[in-house]
Image 1 (cartoon, rainbow, N blue to C red):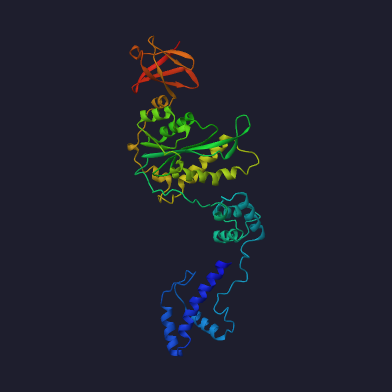
Image 2 (image 1 turned 90 degrees about the horizontal axis):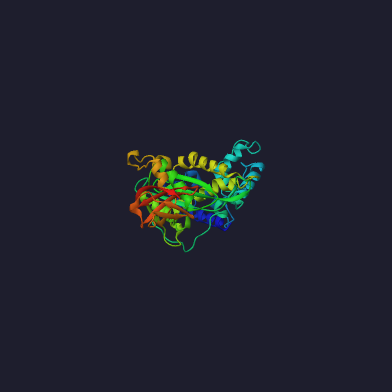
Amino acid sequence: MRRLYHERLEKKAFRMSLVLMLRDLEPQERARKIEELTEQIFEIPFSEKKTLSRSVIYHWLKEYSNSTDRANLLMPKQRCDRESFRRLSTEQKNALLSWRSENPYRTIAQLREELMAHALTSSTPIPSESTIARFLRSARLDRKTLVQKGTPGAKIRLAYESPCPQWLWLADTKGPNLMVLDVAGQARLAKPILLIDDNSRFFTAACYVFEENEQVVMQLFSQAIALYGIPDSLYVDRGSPYMGHSLKRAATLLGCRIIHTRVRDAAAKGKAERPMRFFYERLETELSLRHTPPTIEEANTYMSALIGQDYHRTVHSSTGQTPEERFFQFPPEHRRFVAKSVLAMVMLPCTRSKVSKTGLIHLHNRQYLVPDGSLYSRWVEVRYDPLAYSSVYVWFSDHYYGEATCM
């Protein structure tokens, strides 16, 4: 109310300045002056208009001459139907209040679509987005009031964007925020893991998982490489799934550099954090309203649909292009691909082991005979299939020597 009263006072002061300039002039001189004023450009307080008409100026002069109430003289008149929102029916008002209370992240456009989708609230004409926004603001249910919070003392960060797609990927994990059903029908919390291209904001991989570990990250990274090629660098935080030896060695063999954020500075990956918020607002808050939690397969299907049909095809505010368009502008001949068999081998978990004088290595309480006698008494790199310990592969100095034999 104080803000509105201040606006009215500013408008009154502007009007009064013009009236006081014209009131003592002779009729001919006043008419000439008003003609000049109609051709000028004004900065009218709290108004988008830049010019004044003759009728408006004469109306102010007449009000000044006839009014005896100096307190309200030339004050803008308030609408008697203010805050009544005539274009919103009672059903629409109740629905908007209920939907926004259920999920504060629903946008005005989404709420308007919901009004059109239900028979009870689809009466014509459908209110505009600005009407819906003003109504929610009057009820203190606007997004700024419900969601946004200040972040005092936050670090100042300079904007950075990689020069082209495939130059830098970011990986991140958030949550858990979503409750889903596992194969046994038990409700469990699931976490989303995302890989995003820095230049285009294109998601190269995304899925919900129950367990966040190095093996899952490597599997997702492998799928993304098979589809889109090897990135020059991968930017990750210092969480345990991203600090393992297997991921670093696999990336090194593929010619991809792993870059870690500084200690306690996970927010440096802002471009990966913001999409996490997108999924929370557009997907997780909606799925949480279901009576029965979705299965993890359903959750991943919804995520894939949201990414492919919405996110990738919406123009990004920073790039001015859709992520899909910007990502695939990068020439295919400049992408680095690797054979699936080599990729599968490189992405296996690895560890170091010393070959005995008799040519044996020990792994998971088993003994394996190395395929080459030149490796005896050397420290070798052993890759293995966690689902089949009978398959063990031996590497030395980044060269593959073959499969070890289980003894």
